[in-house]
Image 1 (cartoon, helix red, strand yellow):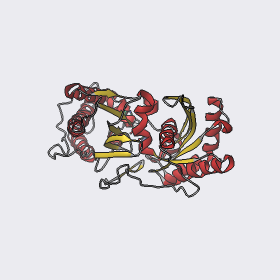
Image 2: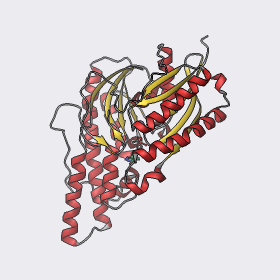
Image 3: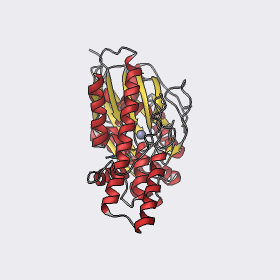
Image 4: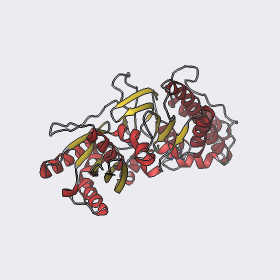
Length: 365
Ligand code: KG4
Ligand code: ZN
């Protein structure tokens, strides 16, 4: 029987300060002993986006508290840990540096091994933490800051099939909400408003579907919506509730269709690998959208592959995913020393070209 492994994880790459303790029991069974997340939405809401300096300062203030709470809730002292894992990028550099400095402090004081984790790898490995999904699986990351298709082959082996060339889908939902005067975060409000609307009344484009690759683009949808809104305002001096609902429904239908079609293409490429148990997993806040989720599930059904959507609290930014990624890295022998540095950009697939764009939540690696 393999001994258990207990890892403290830290996350501070965007606007959530998080700490968690995850234990791998008997070498196979991951257990989340605690997962603490302190969001910063209130600090940034007046600015219409995350302000990097405010985020970095708030992380520096909240990291100690988060670590203390995570250890207390797990009932584990520093002496019972086997390693400290920390997000070392990609993300807003001030926040990432705060986390890395905190983890280095803990490692220096305790002698524990330090492991730098790629934030996107944390998201990408989450289906293994929650559902023990076997390699290789296809991953769609869809959040306010990320959007990419990855074949996940191992804790450090990723093939990126494509991603957004401009906005992330969550960002597009947020901008749409802002244009229509709906509350933030935009995803849930646009989804709720769109339920009352007719998705066919306005003709939104289906960006990049004429291109055979798996790349996506969402910024044109927001521009199209702005034009439609402005035309309505010019014609009738304002928007009715029905106009707003129809615009939301039309916008969402375009996102759904685009994601469904590009997912079909990504699955076809992934299946060329002949995976034993083919699976598509999603992560990121946008995976909460019922229409998107059911469209992806339908595509998986049509193509005969399984579908996994981890619980939302583990799809969005958290430190349990960083601790778990740290465990997988630890088992491969990966260790970082005091030279570990914070990286604003850090693509998972070093061989694929950099994606364009930098969203409100920082660089898209
Ligand atoms: O993963 P997440 O919590 O944070 C990062 O982006 O890192 O994702 C937040 C994003 C926001 O842009 C939010 O509007 C979007 O996810 N979102 C949704 C829904 N719920 C949250 N988008 C569409 N439909 C939803 N129901
Ligand atoms: Zn994230």
